[in-house]
Length: 378
Image (cartoon, rainbow, N blue to C red):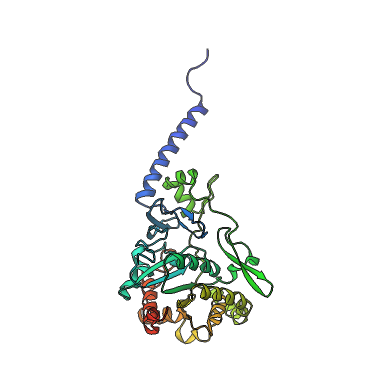
């Protein structure tokens, strides 16, 4: 006679399945309440401008966390225009106040601080009677800002444009150095000058698989906190904020100083082309370039420490252009550190915290006021 009792192998599989379901359920609760898994908005590539940002028809808010311990980053909010901001953007026809546009990468995107503690949130408080809109996405570089400025000019007509520059903004703009993202603009050599090269692909935006995956806290934890590759799931429609850009650690500093002394000259023609494009696309609009790298150099060392090559190339490209100004944030950070000894890093150890955002906003407000940039001829 055959036994009706299940075999040992079947019993093991049943018990394993029950255990996995219970463990998964506990993990879901734990990663939603005790250690919240990172939440991300969906990518969106607006046409015909080709500017990639976040999908304003998708989830509009969430919490960014960092690392396997889910350290708290920022509470994000996708506004009506698809940017991570505490306010909705009004068109040029609807707006009644002067506008300062901030163009940048993950430091302006701002996932590591709450939206009400971003530079664009602080600036209007320091410059009453103005608006500030932020256009930032992780990984962007100078040529992408050229493209974004066209988008911003068409829709919002800013009165001042602020462009944040860090370690590879000119280099990554060059198609010859590789495609950073098929969804972004770059430049390529054309005879003795350059030409703008459009994106080579169109983002598909939200997919059913991605929507279902992001509903699971466990899947989000594995993808974005533990940074594991899961079969069948594409993790990065938009790259996560990088943790290695923007600041030079002590181990790299000596080599960087040696390279920076002359390397910027090779980047200068490309920088001049892109700075020239920005100026031509935004005639009579003041453009302020803001370079950020080292934050803790002693004040007396800054003058003899070369700025990183891409920043130095942009600075040189600004020379002789009355429309352009250049701010080296090393002096700002080092001066504040000497006075207050309050760190500038957020939970990931690299991006700016609220203190740094407020300091930069104050620097910009004072600079714009001192130069009279908001009230010059348009």
